[in-house]
Length: 111
Length: 112
Image (cartoon, rainbow over all chains, first blue to last red; front, side, top):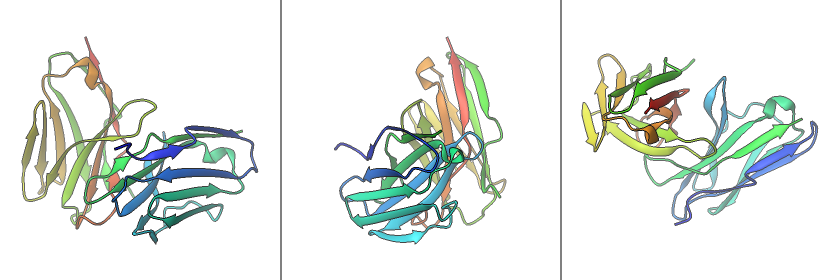
């Protein structure tokens, strides 16, 4: 099993640009989560899906952030327009039950 | 409002000694607790968990203790090894179907 796959692993962009982060969950896992890790706030939950349906997006910081899960094997997190304060590591995780399995993360730098 | 707190940002331990990482929570609805380990440039990986019906769970060198009345759990690593150096996150959930809530992590350094 390849585990949770995220792309790209690193993204450097300029303020105002659109950024799209991608995630492929582990096959058979029915829940998918997007987290953001920063020094100040640790691991914050942004949004999660059950069976491809968004359940709670209260952690999404602003309307500039949006997430989709068009099918069970793919999800995107989009930031438009990006700002320097969005710089962080973004993790995707999936799970069948209690334990969540994390991807390697995308390190985003907004200049 | 932080529901899961790890009050020690870092901990340094000699190789071979015991490492004790602490975690406190505020939400009494939490009934499942996990510890994750994270190396640089990797995602967190599951280490050990405990259900609220237990007060101890052991897996090799790793033991998690849960004190429900104090809303406190701890992770013991004995003996500590240099490869244990990582950031450790405490996490909690309730009903098994809600997202995990994470603490900010504790960076453990095991010195040879």
